[in-house]
Length: 208
Length: 328
Image (cartoon, each protein chain N blue to C red):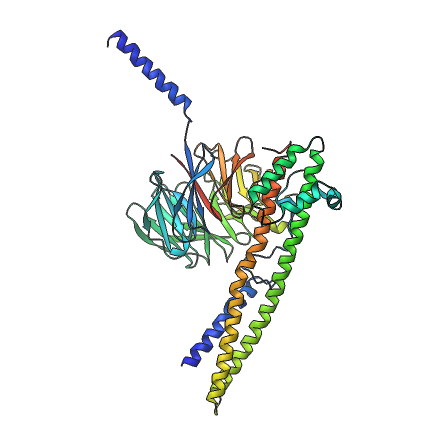
């Protein structure tokens, strides 16, 4: 009875992973509840002038490059970062219409790259978790076969069930730890949006 | 009355009139449900800032004002209840029998009946608000979502997230009288004020289906294309009509835009950049402003309806979902 219960629990532990895989048919390896968005679109946060021209040049700008590197650091509180954007804009003159879009190109480039690395990491995690789920399922089936065998070896079954229980715990703890990691792409997106809003507010035609 | 006294009275009346003129015409307060914080943010719209936070049940989503405007009802989805907030004291003062997992609802202001969408139960629950009793349940499609009531109170519409249908329910018989297929994952359904059309937003398709509520057919599809954005980030969710039914505002989710639609020609006039993952919307009672809840940037945007411009962003709690505005 107890064995059947443990086995049932072990199989139940696999259910969320399988359900998630079924739900997001496009990318069954994606381990998060949220829908996978591989890359960000500048258009979701920016209605200012085009920034494409600065995608390759911002690294060479002695003002914009170090500022952008500082602004994207998550340890710098968003309020301080947006205040820094305001201070930078105040130092600009006629070059405001160039430097601010260039700054936008820079922070977008840096944060989209950072976010993509996180998404790739989550993809790898998801694939590994799926492999673990498959092996756990096979292990559970093996134990099930052992318990129903005519000449079942009690000691062997007990050892196999302990191993299964341990593997299930590992699987579960990985699943729980992913919740925080799954929030990181959104955290980056939030910060990027706040920076875009701050930069845009300093543009003369859209500033409010 | 002695002339001197009459003069004094006139002076006092004049002073009062001046004082009234000097004070803001209306003081409006917005109440915003924060799905992740289990709170409702109280936003003073004169000061344009959050002034208080009310703790509520778990996973608050749908919110609607009571018939007299003195209370707000909040779907505490994970507590399987609807909480009643007294707006003056800013406290939860009671609850209504909602059925499991209430997500959204609509108040029939003619009969004071609340129609609640029970997402996990495939039911619409009817609650007599005055008597605090459940009148019954109407079986609908799988995963019911949006709720709408015709202006005459005779037709209830419920959208189903899984079957992609708008179910028309006759209030008198409590029976489903028509099912209209719309685009994938319908979210919000809303009648025009004159009852001539029902609009349904579809999140996955990013479209609005305009339905003839008499013939029960889709007469028009409205599509949204935001320059520079992939189609999959344009997801239609919240919906509001101006009182004259000339303009419609459609919240477009992760595109961070609200579309302004000419509700007569169905042409999109403008896309307004608001906050991240824009979800639901509410007008101020004078219809001068439209507020949007932005789930990812944790703020609400204030749209000037006459200028069609975003004039302010106000921080609220985490994952803001629904919003109502009361005269306070």
